[in-house]
Length: 113
Image (cartoon, rainbow, N blue to C red; front, side):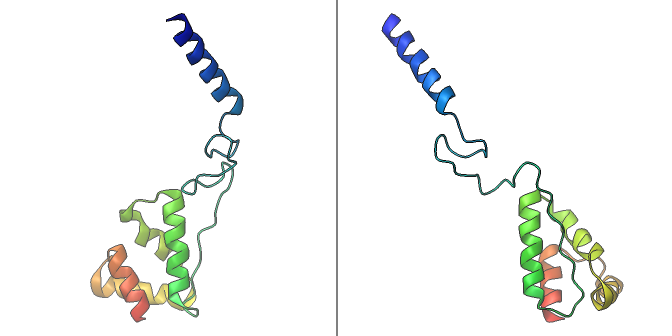
C-alpha cells in the first residue's frame, strides 16, 4: 500500500510540475484549446453595409457567435444592430414584411438580397 501511495504522490508531483501550458492546452504540448479565445482578447463584431459579399459577413458572424457562445435567439438581433447604410434599410424592410426572422432564415434572406 505504501508503494502505491508513493507512486500516486510522484504522479501528482509530475503532473503539477509539467502541468498544462499557460494557454490552457494539453500538458506539455503548448497547444491552445481551439474553442476558447485568449483570456483578454475581445473580438469586435463585424459590420455590414450591404456592398460586399454577405457570405464573408455571415462567416465572421458565425465565428464570433461560436467564440463568444452567443445564444441562437440573440444572433439576428446582434447582427442587425451592426448593419449600416443600405443593409440597415434592408433589414428594416425584412422586419416589416416578416417580423424578426430566425438565424437560418436571416442568412437565407441576406444571401437572396
